[in-house]
Length: 275
Image 1 (tube, helix red, strand yellow):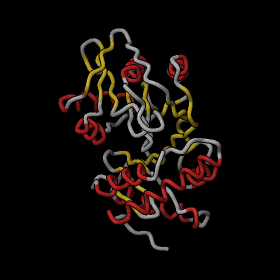
Image 2: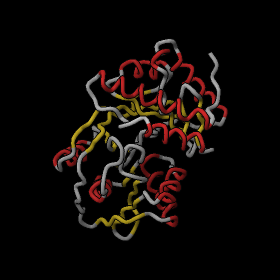
Image 3: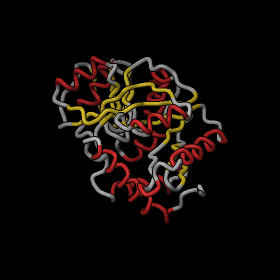
Image 4: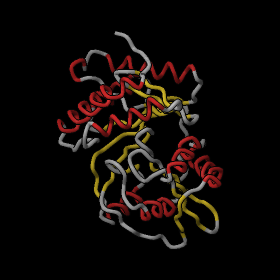
């Protein structure tokens, strides 16, 4: 078995493997696939392989290197060679990369129904940090009194970093800059200052707020919930119930796991699928 770095020429076959693998495991457990068609993961992996801030190995697996905490995934293996320790080798490859580049920790999101991957990650040293619900539904168009949501601009970066450091103990400036450049990011202001932000309210975006009201405002202002939905820590009972009361539904259970540095959050947050 040879593990090598991904190249642009690998994107199409890796995208097909990614689609087939996620579709098979989701449908085997009675859940809708994460991706509606093969073109979606192919486009995603094409962008990740082309981006120097991501490291990828064919098989495939990826490491998001935009922040001091690295994000792992998506990891997928051709169904024809599953259960042959290929997944472990792919995880070893990104762990070696993270260690060589001195990342303080790595994190991933795991499908809650996939017991084999849960066991593998635990064996590799990951701890369960949050049980998540992937939430989806029509936009709820609710404003939170005293909280104003607007598009984020480059000048908001440091304020967003400050909120993220308050909640997580570190910032995610790399993701925030990318989201602002794409025009996806929003901030919420309360009492004249930024108290929360979202790179996007959806599967591949994260949100952070000083309070639940800040994150409610970001969710309430979202025009849609991109991809399969946004990820919500279910132990935040107030926010979870608020989403359910406003018509959102749980699509699937997921799990946030980490290895290395992890700070217990001190505010409200929505993780992204890349952590």
